[in-house]
Length: 398
Image 1 (cartoon, rainbow, N blue to C red):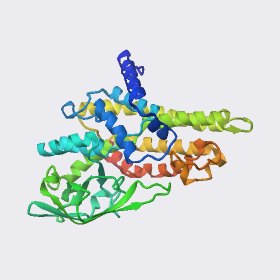
Image 2: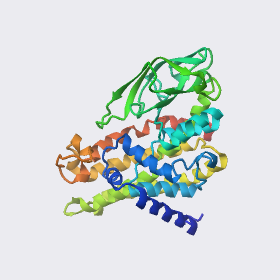
Image 3: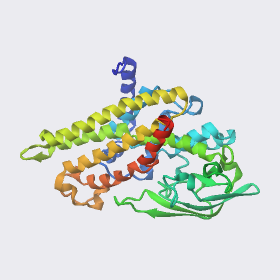
Image 4: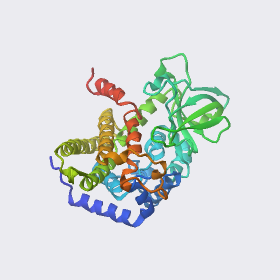
């Protein structure tokens, strides 16, 4: 197996680097590189740059704005964006609901939503998890009843990322109570400005507000906002979640964070020597890098298989499991590397323009909140324990 990039692929890498050098706003790259808090406008600013370049939805079909890049080009693009300090593209529009609409939506839905998804004009959130229905998603209780030309929806969603920013929510609702749980679920698009929608913040252990509770009280949703067939929402959810798990692996981001960790380890000292020379630290770092290299090759193989099949398969669960485990290990080792300076947690350190002086080196201030943030990585997108069950059934046939 030849693991070297071809001359054409290296030329593409240079094209991406030149684009990033010219178009990525320096102040945005600086905030991202330093681990500072990003707001909605930060994400939208980068979305607009990619949209103008025609690179916002590279995995979409060309006729809907895709790039027709190979699996290797997708990997190179992801790697170079994170290395340059570009923020990740929030997946809810281009990565999740967009492919569902392309594959299962009506022509009218494609006309109404796809370009607004790509441009960022409409900001999306994902209404799947509910109290008591997270990893066991099929037990969801949110109810939709058809009354004339509208569905009346009542229920509650939780852990809804960016709901406080969102214009629209794609959500799973129960439309049939008399069949097996998975058979009575439908996929609806809900305007977040509808009467009866209430969003309440959830402040997570890292002190951040990115997730929310969403209360849905007798909200009227046009029947035309049903995606695909009635009671087929579980099939569309499985398609969507396979896409989500592929993206959650975050290989480019982990590679960039590992490079930053090495820089910190060359600066921090232990027993009078650079930390990176400590044998125990070296062993942990080497094991982590080996895992990441193996995941990188696995990711490229699965991207190639996905392009052939036209959709991700159950093997995407491997990417989700290993990718999130690596993210957690990188954040843990980064926190260990800064030692006692990880202990003071100053909320203002997360703000790019804070006047609060750091305790210790500036890079230490974000390590504890980031470590805490990464604890949930093995839960969202379907917990890693559930992903192992998926692999057992769908891949091993047990």
